[in-house]
Each structure stands twice: as structure tokens, then as C-alpha cells.
Length: 268
Image (cartoon, rainbow, N blue to C red):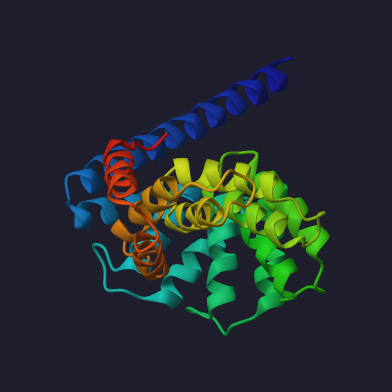
């Protein structure tokens, strides 16, 4: 009985010690975020490093991001990869996604599309929308996997259904061009609108094109101008060209309406 009691007590003490360490790690992360929010990146890095050194995956990911963007530490892509990998190896989906990005772009590691796909898939299988969207891109372009539009659509849809604007726009493109799904302008417009309503410049530009050409919606130059203008205001260069192109087709009243619609728009 005595040995069992001592063992149980020891386990309880060990558990309490682990909980205390975890609480300290969480506190460091919260304090680090507060430091970052006020622009004190050096303090944020110090606290994230404390959490990371204790094995906290979120701290490791944040420390990797600090090295990636050179906030509070010198920019160092290889060091960013090292911390992302530590977090990713613990199953942190966001870090897995980021590690996939590093392999896809060849930052801090040699570019390797197959390795990018491997990490994207781990994160995507956990529901990470960014990874699902990027995995769709890899399938659409045949990078690291055999080219497969239907599989690309499947992953885009998973991310789009989570409200991920990039994936909504990508899914719209697949419907517009009939890739991996039957061609359907109305469905393309539906997805472009979801992305555009969130403020995605590419989605706004694509929606403007559909209104200009009466594809999936009645032709409406004022609406086309609105969406082109909103996209152009974000620096999307194609939209500047398209906005100026539709202007020459418009009456003064249509121009005034398009400008009014653009000024009244708010993201959803």
C-alpha cells in the first residue's frame, strides 16, 4: 500500500509540475503577443524563445516567423525552417503549412515540390485552409504530384467552405474554365463574389470581368467598374487596365453609379 501511495503521489507531483510548466509557457506566449502588438519585437522573441525552448509548438512556430520576417532577430530563412520543423514534427498544422511553403519556394531549404506537398498534406488533413488551398494549387499545376484538376477542386472546395478567400477565387476559376468541374459561369460568379466580398483583389477583378462581359450575371458596366476600381485600389495592376477599358464603354450616369457603388462598398 505504501509503495502504491508513494507512486501515486509522485505521479501527481509530476503532473502538477507539467501543468505548471505548461501554464508558464502559455503565459509567455500571451506576454509575447502583447509585446509584438505594441511593437516590442525583441521582447516578443525573448518570450517566444523561452516557450520554444520548453518544447511549446506555438512558441516554436512564432519564433520561426520572427526569423522569417526579421522581427526582433536578423532575418534568417534557414533558422525559420529549423523552428518550423520542430513545431511541425509535434503535429502543429500551421507550422506544417509554413514548412510546406518554405519547400515550395526554396527558402531556407532547397526547393522541393514533393516535400512541400508532403507537409501541405499533413496540415490539410488537419483542416488547415491555407494548406488545403496550396495543395489544390500543386494538383492543378502538377507540382510534386501528378496533375489532377478534379483533385485540385476537391482541396479548393474544402478551403473555400471554410471561408478562405484565395480558395474561393481559385474554385471560381475552375468553374469559369471548366477544369475539374463542368463549366458553369453562374457558379464561378458565386465563388468570386465570396472572395470579392472579403476584399480579395483577384476575386474583385474576376467578378468585374464577369459583370463586364455578362457571364453568369446580367451585363452591368457600373458593377464591373465598381469591382475593378476596388481591386485597382489595392494595387492589382490588371484591374487598373480593365477599369480604364470599361470606362470608355460607360455613359456619364453609369460612371457616376460605378463610383458611388465603389465608395459605398464595405468588406463582409
